[in-house]
Amino acid sequence: MTPFSSVMLLLLATLTSTALCGPLGKHKGEEPRYTETKGISQALFDDLQLMVQYSAATYYPSNINSTGDKLSCSRDHCKDLPKDNCPRVEEANAFTSNEFMNTIDGDDNGYLAIDDSNKLIVLAFMGSKGWVNWIRNLEISLIPADLCHECEAHEGFWKQYVPMRAEYMDLVTKAHEQYPQYRIIATGHSLGAALATFAAADIRRLDNPWYLANTELYTYGSPRVGNEATARFLSEQSEHSYRVTSMNDVVTRMPPVHDDYWHMQPEYWIRKNPDNPRPEDITVLTGYNNKKGNRHSHSLTGEPHRHYFGLIRGCD
Image (cartoon, rainbow, N blue to C red):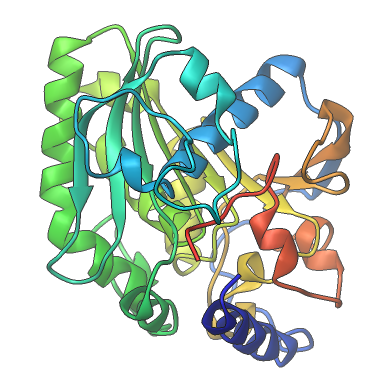
């Protein structure tokens, strides 16, 4: 981790520590019953493991500047990156049909990939990278978002997403026309998780009801992205959203609840062995303000943010 990244995570931890005893945001709707279920099915575990590898692949330079090539997690362009970080993606011979870089309002990168082996269209977003991204991360005012009535979103994340949203929708709809039987996946880590969340919501709102039924969201280490209305909308829009947290990851506690930020639910919490978890190491928690899972610990650190089914990181 770079010194700059370490400083920013320390700042996030400091901000979070001031919120641990703060009041919760205003409750406008009925609160789902809190539940805590230890263990997930092998099938879901396999999906979580595959999709995090698609998220990890966004950090490799060779996957964001070579449209049409097979995805790989080669260290050729950056020796700091983990070796062999996406074996299941490589085994699937997935290739990118489009790669993108937002040069308008940040440097968020990603790709649209086609996985013929698993019959997937994957829209994957890279996490925080560079000064512009980190500044966006700290722009935590809530601003109106046209996802739903009364929806508000994190200002920095929303402003980074909106300039490219039409392009993302165009990429997905064209891919669906070519591969009509393939499931659509939106995935990302950290900031990439926030962008993937907005993208999944938009894809599911497209005119064809097929998109609502066949679009899945997998996020890893996502910060909170919006207010109560946004959290409820995202949670109720689809049952196929999987928000994964790791141990006491500080980033998933930001922005603070007392600033009227809410997470979507349920949460899939890796409670131990984050690099090599088993299905029984993951706990499913329901309820928007469930204080178990990632929220139960007052000891927060940035290190778990890099550990989701292995080491996930950018090129330092």
